[in-house]
Length: 401
Image (tube, rainbow, N blue to C red):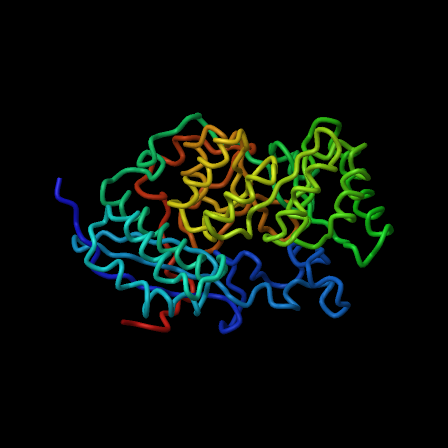
């Protein structure tokens, strides 16, 4: 079989600071007012009074969504979305395009390696550069699958289970239980600057939902890089009587010693997890060495599907789980092939967490959502990632090449 070559790559954005309105989509923090995802959630900026109530107040939603589209010379197109917005568009159209156009649609690993090495001098350890590379990588996998008329998960070797079970991330674990999810992960609302009172308040929240959800439903806390070791250890022990399953991302990504110490001091049986803001394969190798129980890369931020499969192998070699940060179809097609991913995350993007809305609404057409907390293998049996781009959204192509 003679495979086509890539004719053109195009980059668009929607939402973010330069858009007229909130866009949702790949930048799921870019929501309108009155949304749980922006309601007094603890962050590294919470210690400043002006920025403790709203994450949007310090700019969590300024980037917006990046959309990368790749077209083969036989007319087939693939695409993907991530966070990166207008700045990501510049990188794609003015730098990364040279490694892509003219290549065979199967040259994904070669293109990935060249993008990573060519941006190393300005990429640091991840961030918006790796978000952009991730988006390109995912678009290439989507194109390859569509050219071969094959779901991406089959390109990766096929499913190891018949369905994916999900826990829900949001503000209402009790509602998540009613919807059939296996667990509910809540954001913390207080941090070290709040002292022991903050610990009591977040522990009381866990106690409240343990009472509402019963003894066996999973409850977890997402701390979003907002704590120090002393505070995290005290919070973990304060929540231990309520059977907290894990405590997540207590520290900034490069504080490996803090994760190692938290794992050492955590209550017996409580897992320590992190990884969504780590952005290179090397950072995940170091993270694995700290002994965390679950690594949680975001496939749209860590280097794409190409890197995610390597992270899963690192975790598997150490007996660790890899449970990606919620990334909709881009995670689904990967985790159903991983033997060390027995469940996955679903991010509740409805404002009140009372309905299961497509995670990247409104950008993906035919984006699957869990039914009774599950998505079956058959649901993924469509070419590529199985979704199309909603071109009725306000997509802007700010650069060309």
